[in-house]
Length: 499
Image (tube, rainbow, N blue to C red):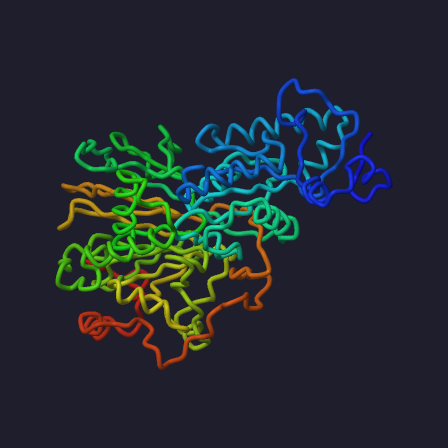
């Protein structure tokens, strides 16, 4: 016997307590989750079945407490500790079971697959990990994802209205969140594929984090297409994806040192406000507020790379990066460094002159923004503040050649690593390209903007006005403008002999 919500026998079978009324909407029975479990005589179709993944190490002790609360409210087998089980194996097994039951005529399995939603409790790195798993598995009906903010920045969470403060872990708070998941709307966002090629470095045992400890979303594989220009003997190629941002330089170095300290002294990083204070302190002690004095211009990330972009298929363009840029962010969502929007909203004049658009999350374009120093980053706190808008593109290619620095720092969706750079005539290549879309769940406080729904979301910036300097350029950059013209993205004419 199968009952659906609001059937006449529903309340008789489920009881009439308020708690049961709330939780039955999210419950998945054991016979779908555990091999060999008995099938119940009465099977009730939940209106919003969920699988919950919790990073118990996130948020200090909060992750562990949240895990226990979810397990006390739901079937404990539908609440997964990411420290014990890998999400790809859990979801693969679940969908194999659902497909098997569906083929046998199981109506409940078909309804659960159609209605399933995923909750992931953790920071940006954990949320990105689940997004990459759902994307890689190519599920027949990919479930949308709702993130619980347990990290320090929680940028992805904030972009879709789930907040950036760590939540309560009591039963009432969890039930409130579950009800928000139930009424949240689905929203498509762009996925971005990233490939990196380099000679594999030797590991430096003195570093608290290995020089090349890559994030979950970036993994090694042995072989790429024979026709791919990145397929070179003697090199290691890494590939993966991201959904919020890829950054390099100043911000990634601060994040790297933060993660290094947290790995050595985890007991000191159990409070979100303390963690954010540590971030600010690292920005000061590393000298990013007086970067022109403490960081030689020759080591700026802009001096280490050549940037090429593609806006039209098959047509690469060279882009000039101001020499004083020390941090570059490739941004998919309007939420970075604790919910700030580095791109902002270009006014109509700039949109027409520089071919710029608002930062839509599903337009197939990624925004490339630069920062000179920490003071430049603080401009984002103003109502119309933004970074140096470098370009928008559907494909981006960074080439690192030998320079003054032997390494830089990179970060994907909150997970940083130390990246060795060429010591001879070698080149490290990072290429980013559009790679389909995934589904997120958004609340009414959503800040992300869809190209199909151009109305401004909650809290969006007003348009820039001409009284605010577009690039906040210093004297060095103004000199470059006098040489190459006003456009920051100076382009060599097609067919020009650069030599």
